[in-house]
Image (cartoon, rainbow, N blue to C red; front, top):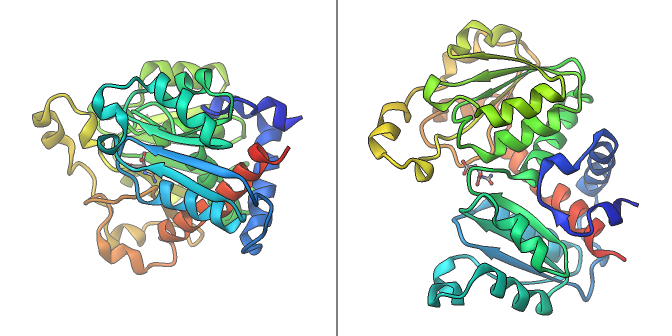
Length: 305
Ligand code: NCD
């Protein structure tokens, strides 16, 4: 059933209802303890990355190898025929013949959706401009549920670049399926876009928008920080104004609950000072490790007939 629902792939967090999320969190959890298998032996994954990536591409590739499958692909638009002027559509219509699933990252918001229309194989959106990054959001939820055992009732702050950050867009969409209290924390220039908020309001999500995180730090269970997305700014002077707006420091930890956890999809630039890394409350590298089990669960679901 799920296989049918995701036959075109995973393009947006909006595809997932509460049951689907529970299903993948369960599968992801199972995959944490299972290291290697041959579930996808003989299958080929194509990773087409037109934008930089460390965790997403390498964890997709590692997940595929750990499932016994193979990987082809490129990690820069400069080395594919796109550089010669080939369209995304033609690239996809070619690559789909060489693989069983495509993972794609592109600077255009609609790129993954368009690719899924041209491909006979499932397409996974590994980041589409400042739009969405649904598989990151799923691994974020796996991280939170591994720590707290549940999502319901949690006070969760999403902080930083809520305008251009695709991870927070997908994460807030997934969270709108649950009974959570959300705090959108950002400078005014980087507030969540109205179209994203409209969607969350339709889903009756409870959220507040604030600028000073210190005011609510003592009630938060989770603080999910993000990088200011330099590459999305048209005017770099605007970026300079907001790039150092927040820096979470060691002394901030003193005002947090014992169970407080600090997450970040990474890469981190200056928004979390390195001294915070040693705290048990800082779990962003553990979070990055969950990219493997969650992506194994997704790849297995999409490629096993
Ligand atoms: C994020 C991305 O690419 O959107 N990184 C990731 O996939 N873990 C976050 C970012 O680049 O800031």
